[in-house]
Amino acid sequence: MRSSPSRFPPRRNLWFERAMAVLALANLGLVAFDFSYIPWRDFWLRNFPVVTRLYDPVKAIEPHRDTEAYLATVDTLEQELQQFGLESAQVQARLQELRDHSAEMISSNPFAVANKSGTLERIKNRMREHVFGSRRRESARQAFTTFWSTENLSQRGLVSEWKFFTQEIRPLIAVNYYRPIGENGEYIDWFWLIDAPFIAIFALEFIARTFYLSRRYQSLSWLDAMLWRWYDLFFLLPFFRWLRVIPAVVRLDQAKIINLARVRAQASQGLVANISEDIAEVVVVQVIDRFQSAIERGEISRWLIQSVNRPYIDLNQRDEIQELATHLVKTTVYQVLPKIKPDLEALLRHNIDTILSQSSAYQGLKAMPLVGDLPRQINERLVADVTSGVYDAIALALEDKQGAELISKLVKSFGQNLATELQNQRSLQEIQSLATDLLEEIKVNYVRRLNEEDVESILEEARQIRRVR
Figure 1 (cartoon, rainbow, N blue to C red):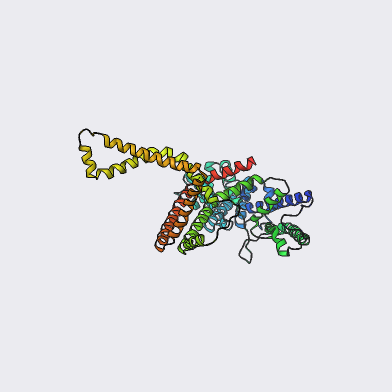
Figure 2 (cartoon, rainbow, N blue to C red):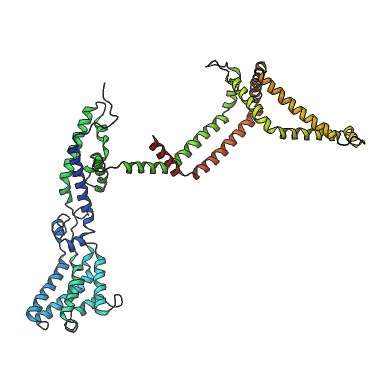
């Protein structure tokens, strides 16, 4: 007998599963770092410059020649100030060069290539605020021209101005970079060289597992075996790498490094809470629609005809109709009638008074002297005797076996004759119309109530039942 692929085969050694899970987690961490590197490069550059020195080549990042030339000119100016002084011809030429570079940087915006135009705006705002005390009213180009002037450096102090540039402006210029674009129109990215070994390892494992499953379960094709753990295919894709979080988390759970039992339970319950209402509505409406269609097709009339004409099949040698009728009659006689006896007497009394009030002889009798309240007393006595007599007769019949059989026969005869009379075309049409309208009202009212139900309370009841079991 072939083994059935109803469940996953026994896991290989747990150490191997854990090793592959850790490898998947490492790959996912690298993917996450690669995704976040460009947005977080400024952070790495300021706090951990060694990271940028190692990873910039992976993203093909290189210094931007314009901003690097600007900072190199500033470094040269610093050396010349120390050697020749502020009034020297070399320093004056270098200041003019910086004024020209500043104007060119503002007009050409070398920060746009790295999508850092906002950084240039911060540089301009800080320089305007430092030179003019305002961020918006004055020209940024004029602010740089004023800053790199002999008068400004001598009046405000060379040390304080140099400190401002070093702390406020230079770090913003230093974060700019250049990233070349390939022939496909995208930025050059060499991360695939780091990712390729991981893809190769996961591809080999995937092929080996597929071969193992196809040999273990001969009813499985190679395609079925591949789809057994379809989520591992995300490890083999060189794009949409963020989807690898799915197989990585599943592997960590299967290797017992993390436990996702609660997460799965909450996720499934949340899914049930979201779709149960819609499913219930669809099921209820569909069932009611089926009943309506059956009624409109005349299946009720066919059922009535068949119920009258076809022979009755007894399965357990019991007359259920007789027993039900006896039970209903006993409940009515011993439990219901004593409670409704006052109302029944009031109804009979009202009917008798109504009939007698229309009789002229009765009215004349009431008008005769010495009769007084005698007619009313007669009515009360008559009503009491009638109700007591009927009740006693029915109770006596129930105590008699033959009387019980007669009552059962009466009920059965009533049902048969009712079914026969309901086969009348006019009665059937009216019943079908009423039943269809009733089902429509039930459908509307039930769906409305269903929308108002608290699905979470139902889920809580289900959780309690599971805990009890």
